[in-house]
Amino acid sequence: MNIKGSITSDPYEYLLTKGDLPISLKQIFDEMKLATELMIKSNSPIKTIGASGLPFNNAGANAVQELAFTLATAAEYLNEMIERGLKADDVAKRIKFTFGIGSFYFMEIAKLRAARLLWSKILEAYIIKEENQKIFIHGKTSQFNQTYFDPFVNSLRTTTEAFSAIVGGVDSIQTNPYDESFNDSDDFSRRLARNTQIILKEESHLEQVIDPAGGSYFVEKLTDDIANAAWKLFQTIEEKGGMLKAIKSGFVQDEIAKVAETKKKDFAKRKSVLVGTNMYANPKEEMLEIKNKDLNAVYKKRVEYIQKYRVNGDNKKHNSILDKLQKIADTKSYELIDSAVDAFLEGASLGEVSKSIRASGEKGFSVNPLIQFRLSEMFEELRIASENFKKKTGSKPKVFLATMGPLKQFKGRADFSRAFFEVGGFEIIYPNGFATTDEALKSAIDSKAQAVVICSTDDTYPELVPAIVKGIKEKSKDVAVILAGYPKDQIEEHKKSGVDDFIYLGADAHLVLSTLLKKIGAIA
Image 1 (cartoon, one colour):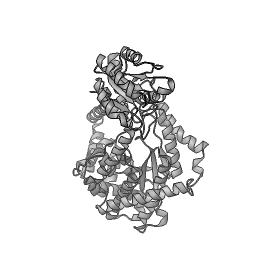
Image 2 (spheres, rainbow, N blue to C red):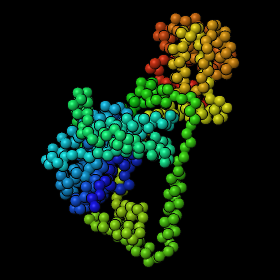
Image 3 (cartoon, rainbow, N blue to C red):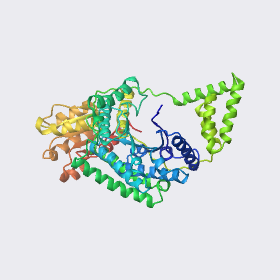
Image 4 (cartoon, rainbow, N blue to C red):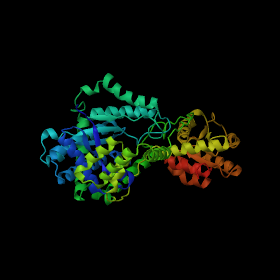
């Protein structure tokens, strides 16, 4: 029976995600060599070495960084196996690459095509046969852009991501359930994720076309640009002594942090958009119930069960298991796999075998981990704060739109203002329009809103703003007065009048919303 698949070791992924290694890197590479050697001797196609770009992708890296760092990781693993006596041709066939697939459709296609090009270029330096230069790529739809609010949009994102992964040439793919990043996925979300692949294969017939993007000038040019940029970064890593030294020095973490910070700023200013989160929020949406299991409780229960199981029952069998576990701890490296198999067959648990292997090893080291996050988290925190405010006070934080003049005079900025504050979870009071400032002031004060947004035109603001601000501040100093728009030649005068903030295209929406929520006590 020809079993296909992967049982991979990727210590750099663990190191960058967790921040440390439980055992020495030397021992990990020795074990990687043993597993790889076993597959070589048994002529098995199972992959034993993993090079994952997920830690980079989920930390906010761009396509070039994810590609370069993943290739550098794979090259270093290949070198370690060669140093331990394995042939480059045998090792190359047993490396599995994993890339996160984001929502930038053509960028993801080009990234995957560039990976094939660059890996082949790297392997040429090892004089590897052409048939062994074929890269194996596993794609996993990204968690970086998944959202808690409007979660069914995640399914749409996953579909386009899976589509781009297949067009880009992945060998296998994992489509995430729409609620995976914040909940224990249920049968429905998992079924939806599986069916996404089935539809793309059985109804769209994407598996029947080889390199469907080939020949497209745009895709070919983008592939070339990404490959060139990634190759330069790959060479920079090699100049620094390789991937491990680049990680230990903090180079990898610092480079990704710069890009991640830019992505956060663009998202805060809504230059980049996640529908339903920082744009086009649904104000009527109910928060999903979180059903996460208590994994610590599960772990504790299993530990207690194993301990009782080892004390009670067939003492002869338990003693035999303990003897075999001790043998694992004392065994030489080349006998390790056989000893572990014997222990499993006797009834040892995975945790017991793992603990025995680790008992004889040296401790690992620590580095600064990559911070894994979802881009939507910053706005989700605001929405949740508004929901919690409602639970305490009976209503969400309110924003009153002081819509001045006829419809055509205020509608554009009023609609913009409503959408702006809805992404922060605010309740919007949107009147039909006021002919005078006195009418607007009375309605604003009666609404008991925590903020008033003046909506009109730049030409009318010099007359309207001072009167409205003065009237609001006289009645309640705590109410924030915000101006819709940013008339540059009027800004200083409006600030002197008492305007607290301005909202406009390009404004830092997260900063404005979080500042207001802090002012009213919704955020500590």
